[in-house]
Amino acid sequence: MILPSKNHDWGFWGALARHIEPEPLWAAASLAIAAATRCDAEDVRIFLDSKSGRHFSDDVMNGLSQGKGPETAIAAAIERWMSWRIGRATSRETGIPEGLPYLVGYVAFSGICEEVE
Image 1: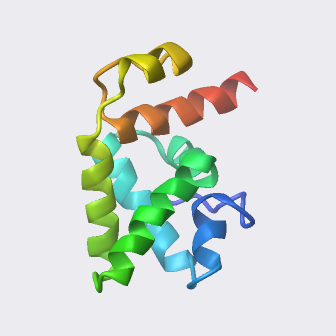
Image 2: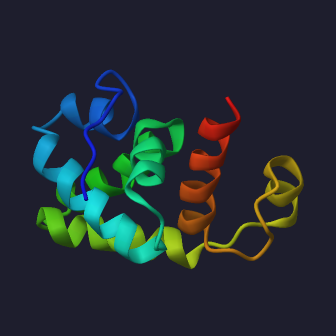
């Protein structure tokens, strides 16, 4: 399921909108991130609308600027974020378990933070 962005000014959507039409990339990224992380659509939306989502969009834009198509650029960004691991300092700071793939950790963390607020 794809949930619409609630942050058209910043996050993934807002960062992309400064350069291209974000809606098709939002839909593709939402589905691909949910599949890669096994997180629910709400957590994915919260992640993409966050500061981390803006950083994720930078990776997608880098792929697009290298001539990759949208799906390939998103897949490359996911692969990169899944290859990174949560380190000790980030784990202490956020409570995300050390060693967890970065993308999984931050998507889940975004959803938890939203629930706490």
